[in-house]
Amino acid sequence: MIMKRLSGKVALVTGAGQGVGQGIAKALAAEGARVAVAGRTLAKLETTCRDIASRGGQALAVECDVKRLDSLENCVKTVVGQLGGLNILVNNAQEVPMGRLDQVTEGSLEAGWQSGPLATFRLMKLCYPHLKGDGSIINMASAAGKRWDATGYGCYGAVKEAIRQLTRAAACEWGQDNIRTNVLLPLAESAGLKGWTQARPDEAAAYFSTIPMRRVGDCELDIGRFVVSLCSEECRYVNGQSIGLDGGQAYLG
Figure 1 (cartoon, rainbow, N blue to C red):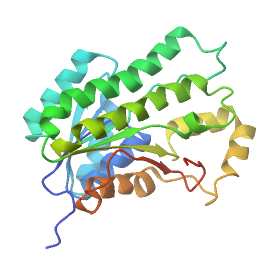
Figure 2 (cartoon, rainbow, N blue to C red; figure 1 turned 60 degrees about the horizontal axis):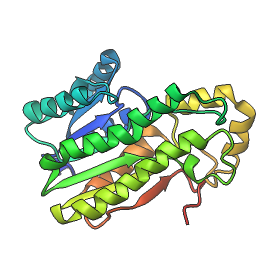
Figure 3 (cartoon, rainbow, N blue to C red; figure 1 turned 135 degrees about the vertical axis):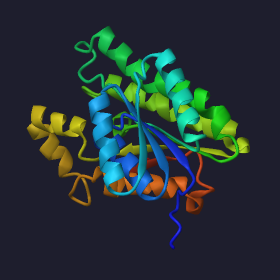
């Protein structure tokens, strides 16, 4: 019998009802992890769980609003209580504040902050005691924070860059506890990307033409499987890194 790379591990993935989060959850489960899929819409989470179960994996749906501390606390308590521990945390959920500075409302920016940097900060701290000794944290940023022309992407880039800084701090402070913390900048066929493509078709076409591999990533095959590798023993010395998963589009140097 071939041992799967993440057998015996427990993972928590936020925003796992669709898109990148769902792809990551499926990939983790396919490699033997028991996966808690968290998000606001229970029906979507249950769909993800059914898909995982149909392939022989184990998944638990946990309804959670990442903008609320009490909801995050209950989520972690439920995961640890029902799955017996926690080894992998994937902070994926995010509301995106898009638009020029004079167009983005304070409410939209506040939602982006609460669902992004603040939720990431809170959930990392809540999970920290359980991750000590054998933990991997994967946070999500965006190449929007690295654009030369930030017109229309200032607020989005700001919240994502804050996540990158929190990731680096966690990597430095918690590495001695054998917790590795890395951040991904993915480009994949998510619901958000599809919505952006439909809303701004000309801009999207121009952007896609700058991808050296000339395609957008698959949520499970390109993003999810990389997360599996990053959480496995093969990457045991990778810590504090910002990694672009975008076919070479962004230059992070």
